[in-house]
Image (cartoon, rainbow, N blue to C red; front, side, top):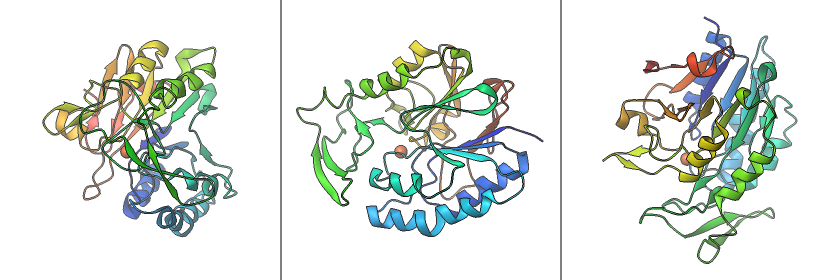
Length: 281
Ligand SMILES: [Fe+2]
């Protein structure tokens, strides 16, 4: 079995799930591993830094020494402190590539557009949260952001809804959009609103309207997401469509085997296979 890409998300520091990720990549002969955010265990800036230096970086350092190891593209997620981005970017691992906020060169002439941003959530860590209209009543406006100097500072969206708009972040990505839109894959932590990928128990949709709008406008063939771990379980599906864009959220549960998808670059949206759920309907 040869698949070109293995995508997974929301590993939240699970050492077992990281090892399973590399195991799957070896098994399918992947040339690329994509990590869609929420990399580290829930914890303080220092605790997450310790996870990166004691587990994450050594794991990939030794993996890259293997014959046929895949290249890795990553973004953080809303549960990861952004203050630790430099630690990963400056680790000296050239094959561990940060994809947030950019459109990167990817396999076989394709491009990869990455964004860690999600709409404001009920959680306190606000580094990767931005504002969009229509958010539900459980949205928490106040919380904390990490600073480049270290430590975290109180942060509030109140009165800053416009300057903190998630739409501006998508516009930044849109400005880097390649000439050939038929060969772009998106990796955005937050799923688009109103799909099989953004559902909490009780069928409540908590995805991003602006992410959906961006996909409707830009129409990439494939868009990879995470963030709402339970959605594939609730909806029974790990993929859905926004216009012609096939969108994916593999889901994740630390008590269960790794949830990931693999695909081939010859037809990314048409060759999706889930490690637990099988092929897309
Ligand atoms: Fe998340």
